[in-house]
Image (cartoon, rainbow, N blue to C red; front, side, top):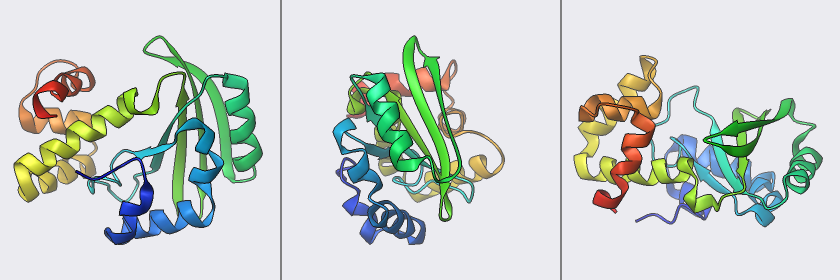
Length: 177
């Protein structure tokens, strides 16, 4: 399996993955976030991205203000920078969004280990499903995404999974991994 915790796998990927690697490494994005165990998650790492897909980076913080200070100091000069505090699944969450070169970037931080956050766990399950079901399955997911569905609902639709697709995909974790 790919080691998604190190972006070097992107160097040998598709055109969009290579561009993401160049952007992230050339601008020292992951290095700037290194104290927070940053992991690139979402659709680009597993090659189901569409033209509007962003680069999602999950981070783990122990001090919310310290995390915000680092994000602001490194990225606030980027185009359309915004940072907000919110609560997701009863967890204090800090989300920063901005544009860097040709990519929109979202930095998502919680006081949860990066590998335990839903974004990373969803990606790992989705990657396992893509390997299991093959290229036609991948194309079907991408088509649904282009038709307007978010990633997890697209997987749930193709797999005929009822209920909350975000929670139900996590239920597959123990079966697939």
